[in-house]
Amino acid sequence: MEQTKNTVIATCPICGSTSLADWMSCKDFTVSKTEFMIQRCGACGFALTNPRPANENLGAYYESDEYISHSNTSKGLVSKMYQWVRKYTLRKKVEMVTSLAGKTGTLLDIGCGTGEFLNASREAGWKVTGVEPSAQARQAAKNNHGLDILDEPALATLADKSFDVITMWHVLEHVPDLPGRMQTLKRLLAPGGTLVVAVPNRNSHDAAHYEKFWAAYDVPRHLWHFRPDDIRALANTHGFEPKAIKPMVFDSYYVSMLSEKYRSGGNRYLAAVWRGFVSNRKAGAERWSSQIYILRHANA
Image 1 (cartoon, helix red, strand yellow):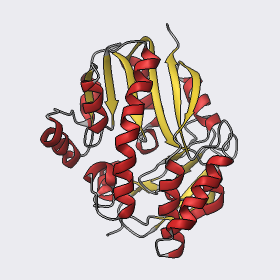
Image 2: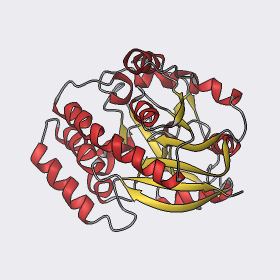
Image 3: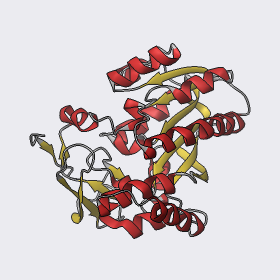
């Protein structure tokens, strides 16, 4: 893959500090096989991929059959496990969202991939809208579920306060303009509405164990690397009230399987399952490999 023009972030999107310093170099194991730097803010500790490919070039780093949320592949044991677990977690996600809202209503899923969550939500009675930047994933959603998914620019055309729930399942870490996206979410969500954000947690045990081989760093596709305090600060700055954190208990196993492969060059399934188990045992309230943050529109 040819080297492309990079973008350098000058200020921390969480606290505004310019004290960004190199922290850890990580390899893109999925597409380019090149190294990218993760920097950390000296003021608040937030971590970000910096520099990163220019926005117009980011799409090239998703062009791989191994990127499951876009290709929906079932090739290989890890991908098969992802598909098996997803069938179970889809039902749980829909149940959780409906319980949080207290009823079905209007739901926007941003970064909806191939549309599995949207389809399950529609079947449960939600009026759904999906946004997805990948043309390949949008076409798969149409072919498989009859869903007409919007492209990313369509976010700007959606009506203010038009959604009871907005979900972003492992999407916020991919968004180039973090403050701008938070402002858009605030505009689109109805007062008192619920924002559900799932992201990897770099405070988790598996992140500490695997360090630069931790698969959820996933540079340069993951532009931001969150801890719980980062999400709380981001929410408070942009008019959301943090309400709860919920675990994604299967992610530690999936991430550990990829991390073991990146570190050793081979599949070490037993080691990965053990590490995932240990990570969950050590998670407590806020150290799960990935976490779901429940945020409410502050103007109820």
